[in-house]
Amino acid sequence: MRLGDFKVLTFDCYGTLIDWESGIWTALQPLLARAATLPSREAALAAFARHETAQEAETPGLHYSDLLARVHRRLAAEWGVADGEAEAAAFGGSVGDWPPFPDSAAALSYLRRFYKLAILSNVDRASFAASQGRLGVVFDAVFTAEDIGSYKPDPRNFRYMLAALADAGHAPSEILHVAQSLFHDHAPANACGLASAWIDRRDGQEGWGATAPPPAGVKYDFRFTSLADLATAHQTEQSN
Image (cartoon, rainbow, N blue to C red):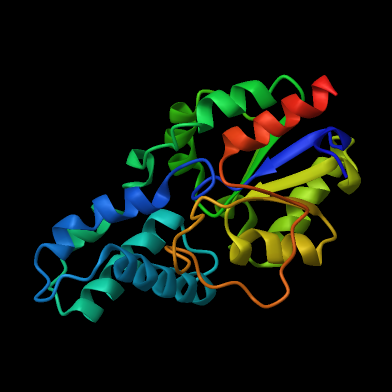
């Protein structure tokens, strides 16, 4: 299998293109500053992963900014900190402030020359629109949890995306899903028979960060530690 075998790259955004762990950690600082015992960055991100995963399962149709506000309240309760509506809402609205990874814009600009680019994200349309401006490209298609009414890893999200891309003339064999999260993305991509590339942004770090641990047996067809490495691998293929 070669990267050049595909015509469409579908991307997870947060964790893959946008550095959501840095964004989450920064946005949690007002809450963490009031905690009696300050959790480490990794402990705070792991707590976020637990509560976000549970909240998405409980309220799959909830707008992501509102869902994040509920996650903020759950974290406040876990850490024994009083939580106000305004602060929870500010956390829910922080997605557009989360920074892109340094390599994302340049790699996407390169890949744009060879592929159609699409997004399959667990956020809402307004939050993604704010992030898209930071990524420097216009995607050919954007599919959000707000559009679909459920959150990854629900296979429904992948079926929705694949149906829309089929309507645009793209067979599943032409599509490579590119994502960091083995839990949210690669496991359901496996279930749908979709090829995938793991962007292992946490290479060398222990734990799963802001992402829930993956189920056993998750597979992927390519592994890179950055999107720049994927672009470089494609360049190498092109020159051979």
